[in-house]
Image 1 (cartoon, rainbow, N blue to C red):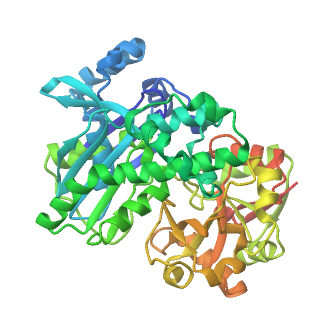
Image 2: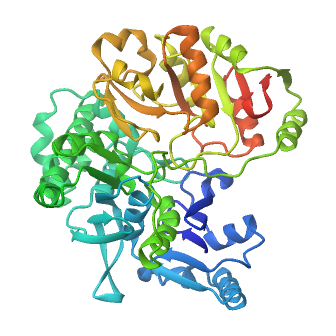
Image 3: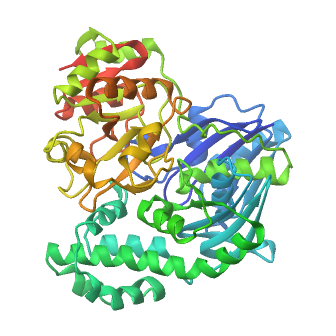
Length: 526
């Protein structure tokens, strides 16, 4: 069975090719348009990228009845789709927004059963039958084997995603959409700097709980120091309110069903601090899972998974291997070499050991390897690596390459087997969606990846996650006795690079020292 999943709303346009229970390809429009979160015609994007669709059994999207659906938004492209449906004798099916989110989380996990929390800025859910929908930003589901069922729907009585987007734009004067994307993560980074923020909590609770934004104008005029406190209060109140809402539901079902697993999904799942608080709050919960693409681009995947497992009743095959986030296409050696030659770059045939020595010499290396990873986080195939032992590496990266605020942290990427030695909790975080506290005696060993609050947004790596990356980290550890590298996305205020030419463009316009193509063992310099 071959299914094409589509995602096209106000942002995060993407499509997914799903065949016999596996994601074959997932592509996000922004990676090709080079504009973060740009809305586009998902069908036109699909037709441009995929010429052969004759064997597709089902096309699927989430409900958008308030806009008339894809047929109303992109009539010309939908007309072309209808011709394909008729030719293939295939179907077009729409499902609920949060149900697709929940499916993306649960069916990508290796949990037999789990509670699932879906939080975002809002989407359409079914009320009384398929033709009647309502808006919701907060739903709870229960997943067991190949079925998902909704157990709570709070509608828009609590809209964490909307609140964060509004305060990001109106108070902090940061972007909340195209062309540089939603910068709620920047506000989350600010929260670690804010101290003595309690004086804002009463008003902030009104903001988060009741959508009372009356203080925004006043707050927007405050000093940077006070804005850090506001960010800290926002994070604190968000955690408090979400836990208060879900505690009675989760606690009851955890005890009754003997559940040890939680999935978190939706755009708010990118808030790693909240994910940690949820995990820590429920003492019987041992595992938490956030998919590689928890925001709306992941709905293209979730729609396919829901139909395949829940509706068509296919069995799941559970393994200990994490779902691969490397869902893009793999560019050929010829495509890479043609791009290098076209730009007249200096080429050196090399190996991992040479690149590791350059990192040891405090050089900054960009990586372009095999399939691109889907999602907001670069996970080693479209990354920039640096030595985390350097005390000034954060300033160098922020000022000379990433061109972003001084308080933005950088992520530690670590061999899975060393997590317990370096962090207070021994958890797996393959997609960089958990924020863990470093052990205090490790702060001075890797200052480049320790945030102001002593935490790091961790990416753990097993050999089954990414063979090349795992062995590269092992070689780095053998060289330095540190199983951690600094990992940040290969971009500069734009979407993560997708093609070899994108990689070269970013390399040339920044002060990255080298560009490494492990796939063809080639190192490039300017």
